[in-house]
Length: 131
Length: 341
Image (tube, rainbow over all chains, first blue to last red; front, side, top):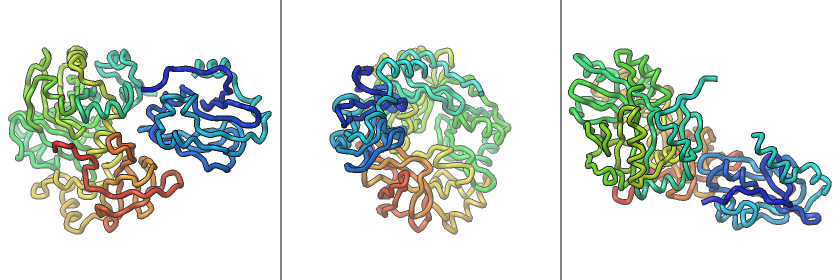
């Protein structure tokens, strides 16, 4: 079964329901509880190649549930340092632990100032309430 | 926007926290917990589906038999009172207007049709009465379905019987490939029947699991795998067509059976991780008509039309998964074989 609904403090949120944990010039990226719940049981994660570039607000991969496919939107731009191979092997990890073991990619940021365009947890919760 | 219709079980679905979606003009539960969990419940124990959205047409009296025999593809003479039959309603071109189950009671017939086609079917079969509003319909499916309800029933037979205190039409039919039944009852009785079934430990299942279950069995879905532009011969449903009798479009079907169709509906399993979806192109020709992730095989599975010379069990085809060519292997239908089958 999936995780309990939560939106941790300290993360930055993108309106397409992605989160980013920024540490210096790198960031870990994943999808929020809301996104995984809307998709249902995730059965496939199609990630980018390590070493490739991702651009803020653009698709960098896909997650698929039994019923539907959804684009993954990059909250920030940069170079892909690592793709979570554990999630590729066991995509349901995204449902079980979306902010922990279910992270998707780590990137080296090409423009740290982009983070200013993302939401904090309060703003993201506000967005969810409006939906 | 047209208002969505609700079945008599809507309050039950909402109370269970089901995800409700529009389907064929109805607000229906797509899942209660997860599609995979509900799917596995039906394959291993028992699940219950609200299928009250489906349409019912009735025809009785002198001439009913001849009327339907001249318009439905299967041979009604093959079934007697208390029996049911899978059959097709075809058009002048041999295309499939709908697929349905006909239940026979002496010279009275009940047709259970797809929700989205009820009006069209009723227009074509203008002698019938649309009695959809008189019925709620629950499907109880799975290896333990019948014993949980305390009934014995042979496949494709039906009778009137009280089930868990509710007067029902009990039919040995379904859309999952498992043993089980479909229960028709008065809409006012449906919530009590649903509660009694769920109290027996039968798992509520949504339309999501219904779709993955039927696709593992290669049961066609009208609107996807079969349409008014596709014939039973192309779809591999020749077994449900009595070409030695007269019915709408039979000449086209006889000719097509003789000549062989240009395309055939095939079943396939993905070799890798991609998941096929409706509308994806097949590199060898044709396209995917249904695709999903099979909870039993833990792989992408699908059906699609391919050129007749490509259609061959064992032969590889290539599915265009959003720009990525992904290999798939054609398999014998059904895709998933029940262990005790």
